[in-house]
Image 1: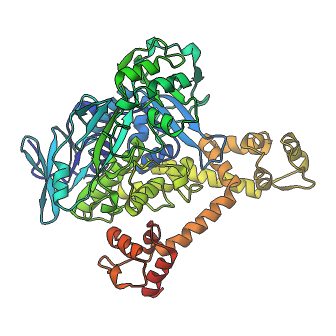
Image 2: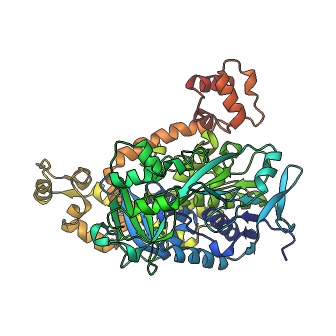
Image 3: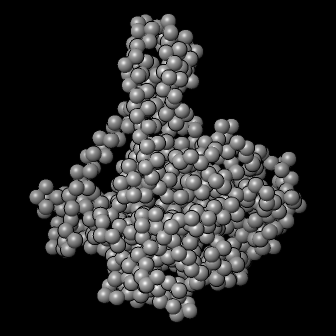
Length: 622
């Protein structure tokens, strides 16, 4: 039934598993994707959307490296929005509303078109481990399948338990059974595990809603797209809508709090701080008499609707009664109620930066098994685990992204170095170099790395280099070209900016906050250059950002270079922190547990102080 030995076996076919399998296979590894249900590959278990604040940057990074998420998102999009456009470009975040069925279908088709990927439908119940090294998996039917490496992307399925009111159902997702056996085996090898919780809102019949009472939420007038490849931007879009809860809705929900598993002790694990359930919001923000609800269509043609902001595990009769009191939902019909789910995860401090486990060689974890939440966070981990599993099997150097190179680098470093006790979600505020890590330049940051290992194509590299060349040329044009007062002053006067008395370089005028590319394009010399060089929207945007934020970008690069010096100071694998009596007790305990690879990583561990770092530097002769 199977090859004698695979290079990589990926367990689970959600966002992490799909990216892991695609990456390993495209790099040339014989790959087996094992999942309990081949009909749910790439399933959007929660909201039908990709991207958002910081998450959109991650999707762009996955695409730049040669992953599939950006392409799949573009092919299944029904709406596109660039969030935070009123703020600086470091905060701009792309987001798509997606057709749930088409998203999963596109993932399935993309994987089937990928050479080197085999598929098998069954539950993996254990690992084959020999001499401290993983050598394959065993299934619930007792079949052993051998491989040189294994990537576990089990999502919410490890001993998953679904809660709806006072009822509990074993399962990893509505209508699907939980996965058992793996947690218990890993615990026997010395791993630590914990429990986390997530939830999902009701799905309702859009035909039963009154959209005339809601606020329309359209997509961008000129929609962009995620992928740097030749996918098409949308030429028409579906609207979303917004409504609100009310004091009455809150009172109706409170009537069911005594039957809520969140409040009666049945759920003991921690849920996502930044995506709380509606009952949690009412409890935590008792002073608020209303909360936003986003009414999101599930696709182009279906009438199913996702009620974003109403995640709940209350009894279904309480959910229904309360939702019928929301404006526009007076006659709502349910497709299915919301629910909460508890599942096993493994604290990610047990991993290396490659996402390989420290206890079992060639075993990799990616996605919610590491304590993260979100499709994008999972997909990025799957991509990196698939890449590094392949590179390890082929005895090549691993790919590790630094914090100043990618949000993916920030995500993995946070997990490995700090761990997490609640579902981890990416935000722009987590990245200290977010001016460098913008969504617009992910291709220039990461495509060369993806191309070097063989994942990003020659065409992708050529596109990136052409964009980079044209952007640099346009920036230099502004640096070198002078403008007369009589040409630039009408623009400056129109934006209430101080007029100039003599000619100066255009770069200086363009650097003013009020002056935009649209203003500069009114100058004949600029519009002629754009036409001559055939500059597209991406190049114009990149040029404007490089000019307006040049000082901030240079400062962040300088700070990153300084930190890189600490990144270059390696700590020996077998270093004994206990012999350094000058270290604080907490620092010794944390350093022994996490085993940082560099001084820079050690400095980011919670509980390790600057004085502890000084002790390490002195001991190492620095």
